[in-house]
Length: 241
Image 1 (cartoon, helix red, strand yellow):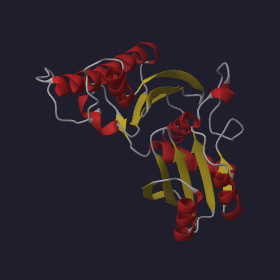
Image 2 (tube, helix red, strand yellow):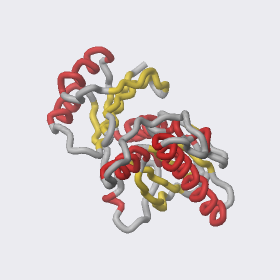
Image 3 (cartoon, rainbow, N blue to C red):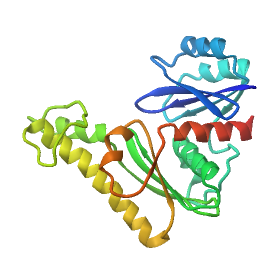
């Protein structure tokens, strides 16, 4: 039973997921994401294969380390994937979006799917029943909205996200929470509704680090999966290594 390790380097968090065959064993949040920390993971799990999805300027020596100790693949425009991308500039598609769409196709083949990732930015990714990634949209994420209101005003504080708030905020913090979290929930429901008018039946997949703040507020039917990106990375890793 071979071990594979999948790395996701996002703007906010650096994570690794360990798979035994196609079973997800563990997700690790990296504190530094440097070669020493990654080498510790390699020594602990002895993976045969590895893949890295990165949307940041990471240390290139990480790629060297993974290449020396595993069958390594760097996710990018040249990767073999389970869908096509008939968009204007497919080479500009972010690695994180490639992994999320790959997971949607792998789990729901021959079906329309809208995969929504709630991270630093919110990405809407639509793949049709012919496995064509048609694109989608990008909007500011939760933390970005909180920071924008704090940095572009004189008196609004930067608050810590919380699920404890009411529709009608009773102080500054709850007003900000209600505005941002319920505002994003309404945005997501509205965009799903727009897709429903065009495509009728499709799966809605919700993932990302901020998923816990929004799933309970959505009116539309969704499938919430915190580890969707890792499942996509594993599928791409299998195809490329």
